[in-house]
Every structure is written in structure tokens, then in C-alpha cells.
Image (cartoon, rainbow, N blue to C red):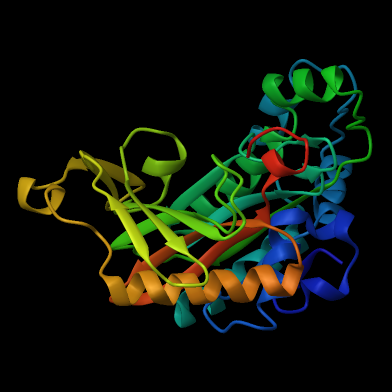
Length: 302
């Protein structure tokens, strides 16, 4: 199976779909604010490698070979058809995210080590983005991390998630258990303007909100929110945040309470602490990712 809808991904093997897409497929059953999408499975990746006769073992040029290789005609046609259907139902563009089955292992985490490409508008960009995600499975950083943790990469387990793009007014990360104090009664939210990459890569100082799960009391700390990343005609661009926006919190209290409720629901579903990536467009919340808080499970911080 080369392509699988995000809604149906839960019915397939984890090694085909990858952690990111599998987690979203699970919570898509209890929440309706997950952007639609589909998964290009690891079987498709293996077919692509075989079609192009790419050797992935001890091959220093494997990333370049993947980037410059061609898709099998039937696979490219299927991807194109799904892309057009998704664009019709989700505004103007898609987000392309790596979904490796190795992202959240017990005692190790590859989370944050693979590619994500936002604001993909054309089929040519999409095909290149999928190849970038696949190539990141063999990056020097990933190879070193795998070697140091005695993890084999020989059986390729990399799905690619293609989802409707959310043009975020505000984005952020939520921890259902305070990752600093390990207080399980506190939810911690980091949020800032624009796309979430500015928070994930540490290029912005976000607002911080700590919510007591029982009393719903909110403690706020104003962040600088110096810049924001926004979609451009092609790709994304970084722009300064106006001073008047920097001086106020980016989340209103009603949205904080809505995010708190969603976080509690996801945590209750999984029965363990989670971190969540979210985006807000026109006061509507979208969940982009959910995974275990690996710092509380003895692994690498994700």
C-alpha cells in the first residue's frame, strides 16, 4: 500500500505509517480539528529506492541520489491525484512532514531530526518535499544518533505525512505535564505568532502559560515574540512582529481554556503525558502533532 488516508492510517502497521501520522490518526477518531491528509508509506519509499536502484547501505551519496531520482509513474500519478483532492478541501497549500517509526522509541527519540516542509503549493514542490523527507532518514545526524544508540536503519521505516496547511495566526507547543517541574497537575503552553517553526527551532521567545488542571488558574509570562514565520509566495519568510503585538499576550483566555480542554482529552485518551503542537487560524484550533513527553520516559527531549 503506497498511499493511505490519515483517517485510515490507524488500521495499518506502525512501520508503514510512522509515529507522527499514527498518533494523529488515533486522535482523529476523538477530535475533529485534525487537518485532513494522507500518508506516503514506507512501502512507497522502498519501491522508490528499488525503482531507482539506490543502495542505502554504506552509501555516502544516498541523500543526493534520493533527491535526484525519479518517482515511478504510477506512484507520481497517485500522489498528484491525492494532492489535487487535498488542495480543494484545504485552502491553498499542504504541509509535508516526515513520519518515521523510529521517532519515539523507548529510551531514544529521533523526534525533530527529520524534515518538515511547509506551504507546499505545486506538485513539483510536493514531489521534491517528499524526497527531502525520505533523504533526511539518512542524514549524518540521524546515522550518528542511530549508531550511538545501537539502532538499525536497514529496514526503512519512514512514512511521509501530507496534510492541509494551516495558515496560523498563532502556533505553539503544549505539555500536558509540566516538563520543568514534572508537576502532573500543570499544563504548560508556549505560544507565539505565525507558524510554529519559530518556537520549535528556538528563534523566538514565546509567551508561556501554566494552567492548573483542577482550578484552571492561569499563570502567564510575556515572551518577547520578536519575529514570526509566515507563508510567502514560495516557501516561508521571517518578519518582525509589530511592537504593539509583542507587548500583549498572543492567546486570549478563552483559547487557553479550549487548548486546556483539548490537552486533557488527548492525555486521557493516551493515558500518559503528551506534548502537542497546535496552530490557530481565525480562532479555530488545529492539532498538528501529539507524542509522548520523552523527557518523562527516560529518553531524549523531543
